[in-house]
Length: 185
Image (cartoon, rainbow, N blue to C red; front, side, top):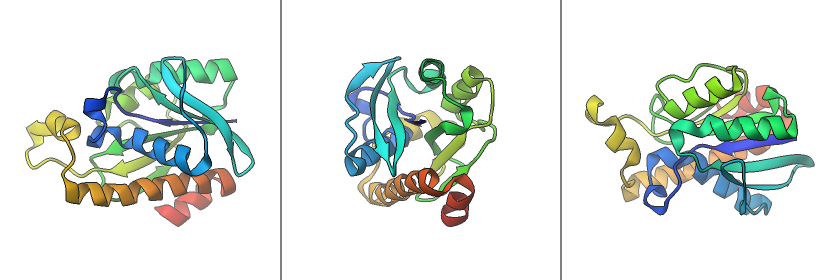
């Protein structure tokens, strides 16, 4: 079984923000694979189903970004999941808008949500799907940048990267992380 988690913030006011790329990818997977993300457990909305014959849980933690790991560890313990079967999707300012990158392991960078995930899982060894959001014009404007509404033109670019990220997850499940990295990175 795989746990596929999109990081983001609950509440409608965050729905069209850069910080919710993880939720957006989960929504796209949910739609394409017909897995409703409507159950509530472990401080998350989630749904269970199959993608390419693999059992999956799609989850959107409702703890707010900076505490995302608290929800993920509850799923991991309850379902006795291996770290190699956890896929975390999140926004990344170190990538240009529209780029995605897959990694089998690594540090959190400056992302507080990922810091929480690593702290709670007590490892950096889990799969990540990073969705590039670019950097703000002014470095001291990071919080506003990730939480402000996305302009229309940028939204179109990000929508394409959300589809690429969704496709990359399907590729991971079908052919493994190494083949997926070769295809999408």
